[in-house]
Each structure stands twice: as structure tokens, then as C-alpha cells.
Image (cartoon, rainbow, N blue to C red; front, side):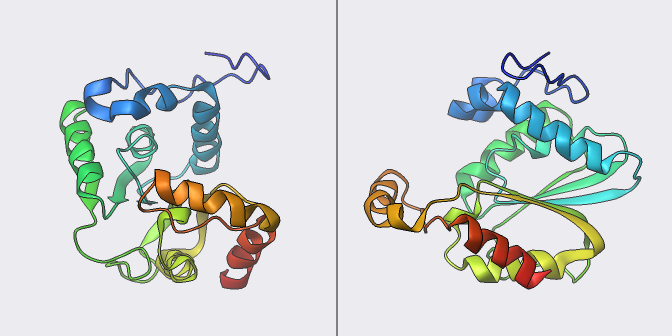
Length: 196
């Protein structure tokens, strides 16, 4: 498959068919070329490693975790999500795609108080989840704590200019009951650099 916008080839990770009964309204997004390019980016950094343990923090239904679990060299993908519906979708995906290396947690702990030992993960993915966390600095601190020294942190979330937050954040809160606020680009960079 090739992205029609930039020509980037996204063949290394085969997502298989992510259907509606497993991923609900996220199926269309999960099969989007832009999402696949992001997965290619992760795979490029993880290539050549073996026995890799990855945390997908705020995993949702598994649109990142499922393809990462199929990468050669990945021993385990731990999906942490406090939402019971997301964990239910992950259970379906694990069974449907026969993913022995997929572990689902979230009924204990919070993103700012993770139930894992320090230095437990080789890589941590937190993609479009941070704005749902009530304690964002605490969640960032926990990611760094759980990450091995010289481990990989893949963190992305929408950035919001500070002058726009007062008008747009109330709208997001009406749309998403778990919305806790976007950060500006500089706040995001400072949170990563300040912790790592």
C-alpha cells in the first residue's frame, strides 16, 4: 500500500483486516495510510531487537497494539487502559487474531500510578491518549519510571495553542467525557525533556 499524499510505502506491517465487530468506529481510522505510516515509524525503531516488551498506555481498542504484537522480535505488548469497553475490545482482538503476546491490564492502577516495576519496558507508546489522563505530569513521570534506561518512548498527542484552549476545550469536554485538556507544543516538549 502507498500513501496517496506523499508516496510513502507502508507494507512492512500488515494490519490484516480490522473489522467493525472488533474495533467499532475505529476500523476506518486504523486502516488509514497516515496511521500505517506511524506504525512503520515505530517498526523502524524496533527493528533488529529481540524479546522486546512494549507498553501501550491508553491503548483503546488496540489499533496500535495489535500490529505491534505481530512484529518479529516483540515478545509482549502490554495494553493499559482504564476503560472497561476498551479492554473488552482488546479481549476480542486477542482472541480473533490469536495474539499470545498481548496482555491486557487497566483494572488496577491509573496512568499516573502504573502497576509495573521500574525499568520494565523496552518501549512505551502513548498515542493520542494523554489528553484523557487526569494527572498528565504524573503519567509522563510514570512512563519514564517504567521505561528501561535507553528505552524508546513514542509519545504523541494533539497540541493546542494556548489562546485556543479557552474556546475549544469546553467543546471537547462535551464531546468526550474523559477529556482532561490538551497541552501546547512547548508544554509537551517540556514535559518530555523535563522527565527524561
